[in-house]
Image (tube, rainbow, N blue to C red; front, side, top):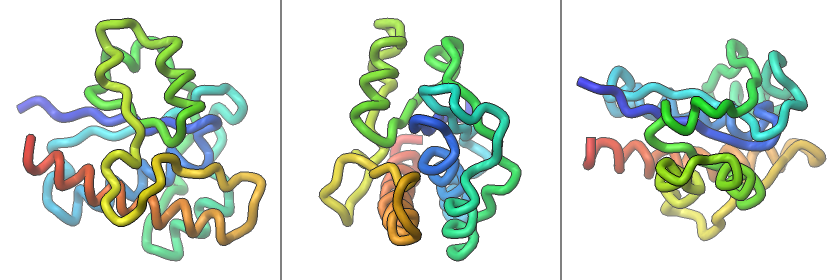
Length: 158
């Protein structure tokens, strides 16, 4: 059976997208389909390649039982557009960057992650980098909701 391949994308791959990767892994484990899905995260910019997630993101995630410590930032590569089934951007700026680089035959794979959220009306996961702890908690609230929705979608269509 082919695995569904998901790529979560933000700007630098140290706050939102690694949080989404960690949360999604946990939700897939919880619903019993982790073995059917491959997950990664990347950034549209090369600011933090090889670095672990932001310490504040790790602390907030750990407070809810998610371990992001093994993750390392990388930049989206051209091969990602072919490799992944869904490329989930955290906001409109990053999906615009992806659309510019993505070949036409793979454009259908690009979506906003919060399209899968049910409890929140927002369409974008705000960048918490320049804010305080509350921003990282808000990011987790939004990502947990979208991860549940995406896991349900994968179960239904998987």
